Length: 293
Image 1: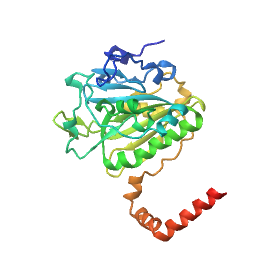
Image 2: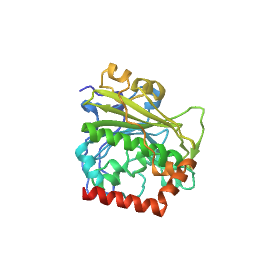
Image 3: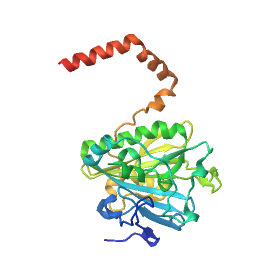
Image 4: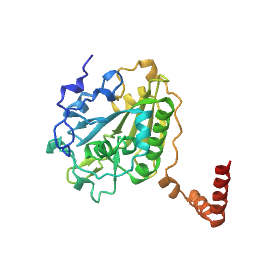
């Protein structure tokens, strides 16, 4: 198997420091054909480290003190377990990284930005795997409007597709604007201009990418993997044929999150209307009738 140039950096595959004993974890299952994403820009590639967790892999950058990409393999079986796993977890710095590469909790404190997961905790089959997603090596600064709004819809759409087709390979990452000098915290963590989530569906033999602006009025669109590679200089699926990356497969629509609905003026009126006692009574009667049927 061809080893891509990003493996020239140090590969750390120890489990999280919270685990009592050292356990070797392989990154390979998270990539199609075992081939990790390729950073095609040499400057961006320098000073990077790949970290392997049980259900995902990330490439960390010394320049950003955060991930350039996070890759995961989603299966219908794991998502079924994830759906019945209670959501809980606390953020923590990744002890596998040297201090010069590590984001800290104080960097986000009072920053005005959310800690945005690349690999969402909602994808994880069990509490211990879910806990791994809360390390800051899997986090980038996102606006609340994106993180709790459209991005939730993107994550939900991807899970729905994986559930329908049985399996997906997913790579998520930030995109930085060289003219945007926004940073947070004493370690000056750069704020990405956008975040993206690329999918490869081996069943449909298709690819596509959701891209969302990281602003207080986030807009999202669907683009090809080939265009994403030009924009962010990262090829999420180097082993997939070029013809499959030039075209966009049919992608599920991005659903509204509860946050997005709550903060939409027209939707707030709808929520008030649905909350009315007579509407709630009618809904209960309808559900009861459906149950009797």
